[in-house]
Image 1 (cartoon, rainbow, N blue to C red):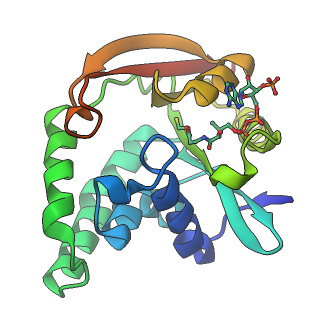
Image 2: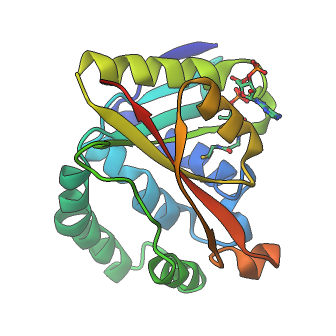
Length: 209
Ligand SMILES: CC(C)(COP(=O)(O)OP(=O)(O)OC[C@H]1O[C@@H](n2cnc3c(N)ncnc32)[C@H](O)[C@@H]1OP(=O)(O)O)[C@@H](O)C(=O)NCCC(=O)NCCS
């Protein structure tokens, strides 16, 4: 297993892992039919935009996991509004997202039940961490997160935040072991159509100063 920084050429491979794990560690195909739209909305901004400290894990040349994020929440939001949104709109107009309509329903729910966050000034970085099922429980998540935190510290960032849920038990345990604390916990109906119940969302933070 090899851990290395993510480059722009890794977008496709990282996008595939994100799609394969985007539903509480299972495939996002459960609720989002368009894999390319999924990649462009949830991964592209970190790899082609103002991302930082992005690492991936490879096994025999195949990407099996990643940690991606931003160090600057404001730059990230600007990128989403002025770069990513027009980019996705252009691709959509060219018919490059054939299954956009069914995926769009989920996007509407994401906007409707928008997530809470910790203050961006204190916690300017945020992250996403996912591994394919076959490489979980081997210490890789811990290794990726440690590499990511070391990179943030080297950049003298004051803090990092992330969003997860009580459903992601392994992830919450890992975050707590590496020093993250729960900043906020709230119930949301975002996943109700798929899980049949509300889910407890967590905002977790780590002070690096
Ligand atoms: C969460 C995830 C990144 C953890 O990575 P991992 O490589 O499987 O975890 P590690 O082997 O590094 O274990 C680190 C710690 O995580 C916790 N952990 C790992 N697997 C666990 C499990 N099945 N149940 C409970 N805790 C678990 C343990 O506290 C473990 O510490 P320990 O080894 O001292 O007991 C990985 O399991 C994953 O990708 N899960 C699915 C997607 C996901 O939930 N992503 C996070 C979204 S917020």
